[in-house]
Image (cartoon, rainbow, N blue to C red):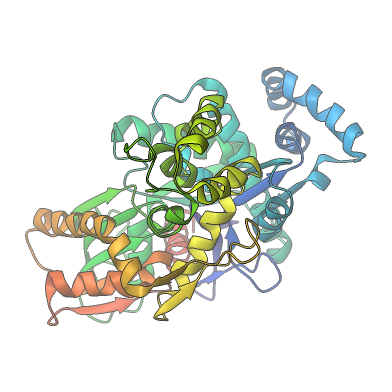
Length: 455
């Protein structure tokens, strides 16, 4: 059986074709979307989970040799945690978030691994690790989908952004796609195809068009923003090769996660001592605060938890004029609560899309700590990111050499009125703006394409 698989930065979803129409598959009860998170009591459990489901004896031996040290650690970990199977100690989606927030200093938590797949300079050990993490998440979704469909899934179209990273894009894209393909093969997908996510979102929209249109698809996802100018409609929809309909394309690693991080850095971190005056007259160093909130940057997280940062913060406690604020920051670092702070920023971002003000409940740091932010403050904090998205839209339009008839906006972050206002500023009121299923249109479009490729 074939499916479309949106392995997203923020959420994952899968679709299949029923009665000629793409349908999202319920994965957790009636919920078709799974947050892209994983929590394991031991990091080594992830490797054993993958090893346990391999059926080909040659693959099994090869994998066991490459992961021998991890598999040995996993056996010891099962004894320590009194588990019969490692899957009892691995959690996905909302369950992973809940386990992490309840005990951030224990276990291993990863959010949005897709953000890291194209990172420059990854050593083979890191590549192997991300293959395992991605495979474990894919396996969870594949098993749940097969249970719902009562069928084996062997063929898949997986969505991918135009560029996983802005730097060394060609190498980055090749590395990330290789990791996704290896993970997919490892969990039992025998035939794997890839499709740009904004095109997938557009294909879902195209099924509803009754006349030909030039459509600008603006897909603002969790980790990337992609813009595609595409010819769509009845004359184009049945073509398997759409290269000639593809007029312009841009993409960069700017997404919902970046809006969360900017909000956390600029609105929340001043309540933790960022920008506090020092007795020396020198400015408070910014990097510890920037690194703390940059949860999608491996290097930043490594530096934040490095001993050198601890020594720096200890010195700053003697130099700051606002000790109580810096002590909050140190408490957050010691408790590994930075992911939870960014999570509250994300929830606040969502709230500010429909309300004028929001308070961020940070009582896990301090009982009465609840900084407040207005929608205007959020817009100001997001201004630099919005300028980058505007540049992507303008470049895609310039490449196409033509203005769109319709702007189709999709992706979870595109729900923000800031994105709609930005498009209005660029094109005025004469061009229609159509909202897709902000979370499901990519998955649905991948299902449409899977039918054309495999059906």
